[in-house]
Image 1 (cartoon, rainbow over the protein chains, first blue to last red):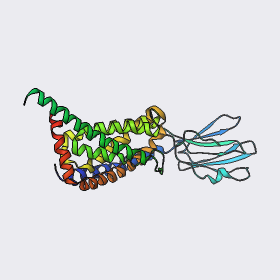
Image 2 (cartoon, rainbow over the protein chains, first blue to last red; image 1 turned 90 degrees about the horizontal axis):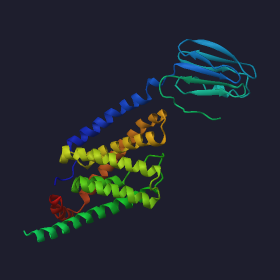
Image 3 (cartoon, each protein chain N blue to C red; image 1 turned 30 degrees about the horizontal axis):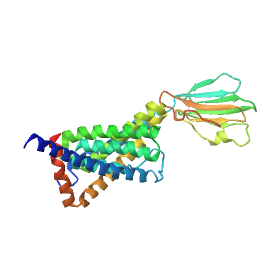
Length: 125
Length: 193
């Protein structure tokens, strides 16, 4: 029986395992999670889908009035909304697949969709 | 040696072997149950201190004994904690089986070229991967689960290293005399199998 001691193969194994870790992060947290399109849902209206690739400013008519949604450089955000506390604007720019925000008073939901794995399954308010 | 004396010495040897399994399984179960009391920072993350026993048994007594100790620990540990046949038990069992298969293969191929540290890291990685797949296929078949995998792997490597270092420390502290006596007693049982 050999005396208990760390062997070269141990170190090699640990080195490989640690070296492979960033790869796992890259594969599973990587850029596949960027969204490609934005889905705008307004109660009582058809869904709207817009590509995130084209920069544009949309005006969406909700229950209270017009909300302004801007799509810029692959990100989307509420720019203006007629609601009281502007939660939707404060959630900022959304770019990852599954990112969702909503202006509840105005009945508008904004969510990013893509081909990869969504970050959230569903969101309850 | 007559057939009769050989049979007697065999039965004594296998009794010794049973005792070794029982001692180490009892130790592993105690650690397993005590560890279940320690709150974990995140659900599903555990140091797995009981695996230190499995690794030490593997290095000293071979794979068969380690498999016995590990599976007995999962079974009896779950009966004591009260998680028998629950999802926790299924995850625990799948992790234990996968690490036993992986360290079994590594032990056959590499033997002494890996120390307790190497086996511990291998076992930890196999353990978490099997648990992850079991959780994915049986309980949460949702793709978003994969986001957890890198974090779980990181934790597995860290706990594998920590457990491995602890196993080496325990090995060094095992009194050489006692260890030798257990070990030489073990030899006939091994050769008779």
